[in-house]
Amino acid sequence: MKVGREEKIVIDYLKEKKEEMIDNLIYLGFNKGQIEKICQTLLSKNLIEIKVQERKKYVLSEEGKEYLEKGLPERNVLNLILSGINDVGTLNLKYEKANIGIIWLKNKGLIKIIRGNVEISEEAKKFKDEKMQEEIFLEKLKKGIYEEEISEGEKNILESFLKRKIIEEKVEKIRKIRITEKGLNEEFEVEEEITQLTPEILIKKEWRYKKLKEYEFVDAGKKYVAKKHFYNRIIEEVREFLISLGFKEFKGPIIELNFWNCDALFMPSFHPARDIHDIFYIDTEKKGKIDKKIFEKVKEEHLKYWKDFDEELSKKIILRSQNTAISARVLYLISKNKVKIPLKMFAIDRVFRPDTIDAKHFIEFDQLEGIIVDKDLSFVNLLGYLRELVKIFGAKEVKFKPAYFPFTEPSVEVYVKIGNSFVEVGGAGIFREEVTRPFGVEYPVLAWGIGIGRLAMLKAKINDIRDLMSQNIEFLRNK
Image (cartoon, rainbow, N blue to C red; front, top):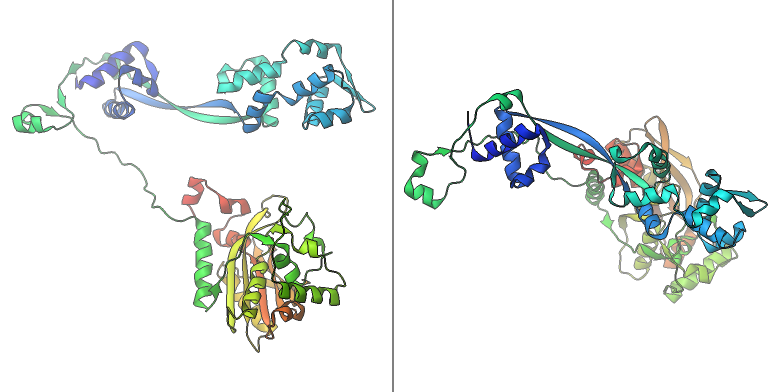
């Protein structure tokens, strides 16, 4: 059988080795592109077969890298104990991860805790000059280790490190090439081929009597057209819908003053939603600047109704917890005649709140805020707008539940059916006079704040809010 010179080199090599990893063919002097081409040619002639195998590799996580550099918690705690510190409280003061180290030393039977004091075993004392098995294994993991390189004695440590998230499991795909019976038994003859046309070959017309290398056109598979992230597309669809209804979009700062986020919205200084468990406070001594006239008018409303107003709290800098802060700023623009009434405005932007992260909750999310300012508006108008809004997301069932918000009266919570249950997606109401009066706004102001993320879950047919930020290409291709 006639083959090209490059194919012959690979065949002769495989006759000796029988099987080899494809990537190792670079040692024969070929680049990756040449290797792929040679393998495809030999595969089409049934001279080789290619097998794909999975191989597990364990590598250090970011926490594992820190432990490799600074020592495992159990080692650092043991060193402190051996230096004479045996009080648990002192150990925690000396080392921030002392509790972790103590737990693992107790699990290994190296220490006991009696009435807040550490009692060390004789076995533990030998580790003053010797390394623990965990430390030896940690060093072994510096450049990663394959599953087959792990000894029986190290398997328990491996499981422990996985639970502690000191290491991560990676799966590598290895392609191996193996010569077939046909490849072993066939006689081969090298045939000179023209693999690349050059001006010289064309001028001398060598292509007439020399063989041109055949090109095999292989289906490259499904092609994917580039597209925007599905969540961005949903937000744009909502934006276009609102603009088509005559709404104007407004923006506001993410790093916000407590005044605009809470006080301008008639939220009392003692309200629980202003606690550190509901708002991210920026760690700074700086205070924000506020228009003195507006500040005094807002303060007056608070003192009249709530009998309390904390000026220092009002000037603190926070991460915006609600886009209603943007609505408050728009009311200020109205008071300065920079925005005219009647007005329909909206904002789609990020807000931040401390929360337990799970499938339905996250510490940052996008909120759709809107207000409508005009004469003769009613609560019925507001409910009508809300029904139309949620329809964009495919919500077929919507419920309104009476609610309380410091800045609106009457107020409702908005629920839509996601899966088999109704989920709260936002709140709405008509701004109280205590909110609008400081800004000189005399018309009714319909207002709402909707968690656009939860509604986007409904439209995208996903059950985990974290998927809205997914960067998984396979997942995004299907959205």
